[in-house]
Amino acid sequence: MLDDRNTHTPGVLYEAFAPAEARQLAARIEWHYTPKHGSWLNMAEIELSALAFQCLDRRVPDTEALKREVAAWESRRNTAAVKAGWQFTTADARVKLKKLYPTTQVQ
Image (tube, rainbow, N blue to C red; front, side):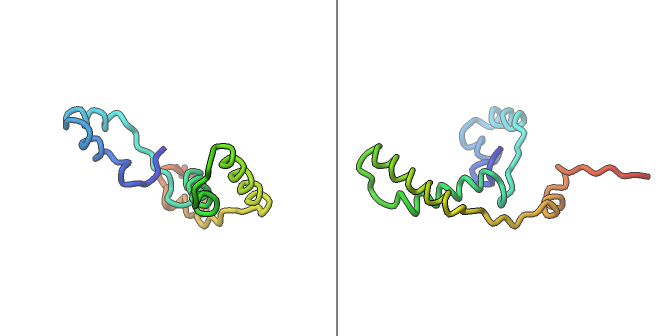
């Protein structure tokens, strides 16, 4: 699974390998992109961003202090029961990702 970053495309293979080898590699890869909104990857990125902004925005002197700071931040975040406000519904997914939601037609 890949997020939708511009670095995750077959084109980057041509930057790293000779054209023939890049073409071979690209043919062997089945590219699956996560939705821009609502994926577990997006959720993890949001949490890591919040951690960096709210807790790690300064120099931490050592590993033990870092562990204590992160544990305290995590405890506050869990106590507050912070939730993601997803707006990408199943109905939206069926339209946007219709290839992944096959339908059978009854005749």
